[in-house]
Image 1 (tube, rainbow, N blue to C red):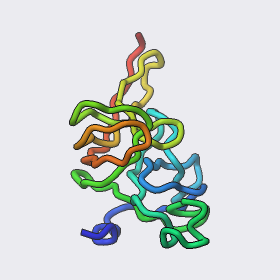
Image 2 (image 1 turned 60 degrees about the vertical axis):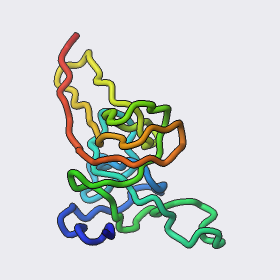
Image 3 (image 1 turned 45 degrees about the vertical axis):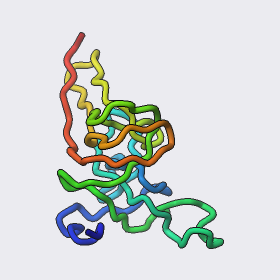
Length: 151
């Protein structure tokens, strides 16, 4: 099924920065309808960008490797229970490991933080295959958060 099939059900978003393919994206600051790469476990996750670049592979325009450039309308996977690809930021050897974002929007194992009570820890979903850093793996979207408690 194409990414546009369910797009009307997701908030319309625009790239607040250049976005890479298969990366976790989140709301960007206080600017309405703007997203950027998620920057860690506390980023308010929206979904995952498609695993393709904006321009045809091998074309001169594709040299940047971006899926979306600043100001572009962003298509993304964000509906619950959607299966898509995500780029890993570290090794994830076990299937169905909860995933969250690195500072670069790549996926890593979700490990809730403690310390500041009330901090929201965001999870993007679960990996459906194991993989190493920079590999693309299938993920089952289940965006949710947990609330941290003081340790």
